[in-house]
Length: 624
Image (tube, rainbow, N blue to C red; front, top):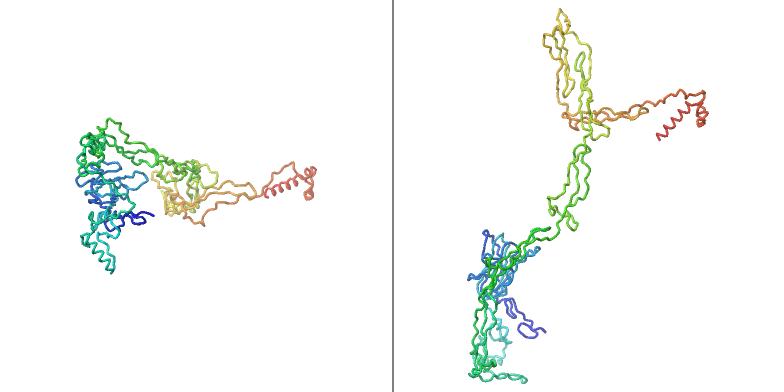
């Protein structure tokens, strides 16, 4: 069976959070909270006050930050992180208890700093935060005694039947013998029933078991022996102010020989008083802090650590000037670090084909950031300055070109006499046609062609006739008019030699005209060469719809679109006549029908008929 905290076999009692054996957690009070105030000024800010007598102290930063916790006594003595000096994690004595200072430094850890102490404290302590960045929140918790606190020592040594408040347990009973027993007990102890009965020495006989050996009584003490200081304890420290105590032994007053302490009166033994020792300061040393996180998550980075010159004195470690540590080699404050190999750029595909068949276009390829494990990760994981291009220009050479023409205008520029009809001509890039074009060249097709609507009537002097219609219904065209030198006679006009009017300014006989924008119109190239010279071939041309500014358009009337393909050379193929290949007989058709052309004699005698049949059969096989 197990032993409870009351030292009874089979007891299930345990110590509660108040430190009471068998308690119900009501003899103390838990104080907790979270400090979430928003701070603006850098420096020390008070968070919470830990009262005297506090136990189970826990001060914890809720998440990692660049702030620091600090602890100071009410007397002004710094315990942890005082005077802008950051102490290393460890154990620090203060307020009558030992505080454990933790500062996680793992890169993956998100935990903040913390102070932990069991207590109890013997003075009021103040907790501060050295504010450097937004406060993530500070959780604090400690336990203080309640109003009805009970001494743990009293509970641990009380007798069965005694209550927690010191009263004698009175079971509910009407037995008068029990009441008389209690009254007798009260009379013997001389105490009221409301107080804890205190047993006076010698009032009750001791009932020792028969098998218990009586304790050996010490010899009678006399003045032949006394206490003598024979030395001191070892100093608690080798430097920096330690403490030691005198050592007293019982000795014979005459011979000064050490004897058993039972020969001396223990009540007269001097109480050892603490004495300071080794007051000279300890040698200064370099206090090495923990390495900071690596400056880079991959590849070669830097990490730093704090190096302070410290000196121990009076059980405290103080920060001193660095010259005191000049006799020691100063550790490095920076170091290179590498957490993992950085991701790298990989070209996953070859360049695509150019986006255009001619001229300048673009081509692309697939570039990915790949980790050292072969996984595709975000581009930010790789060095963007070293990223290979995934798009670039490509030049496919000059594009083929061709002349594009409109149909001739329907109107002649002159109402009578000689005039012209016009059409539009433009050289355009052609990269969608399969025609073997090699560029427009200098053979620009003519934009005008002559026309004549019949002779004109006679005119007078420099006589300018009316302007003809514009050579085009839309867009740019020309207008013509007749200008002649005439002489007016009665009822007639005589045409003279232009020389007769040379001293006069001759009116212009042609001018440009523009009726309205044409909008979109069909343009086409010249017909290509016929694919066959006989028995039906075809020829092609390219047709495009262009707007006034000669750009591609979709506004042309589809019903007016010129043909892009037409048949040509539909006549039968006529073989060349060989004067040496003739039929010598009139009935060679019988030779052909009898299929005798395979013989040399008939092939020569009926050469023309046999040759014609052979050509027809070869053409038939070709069409198959």
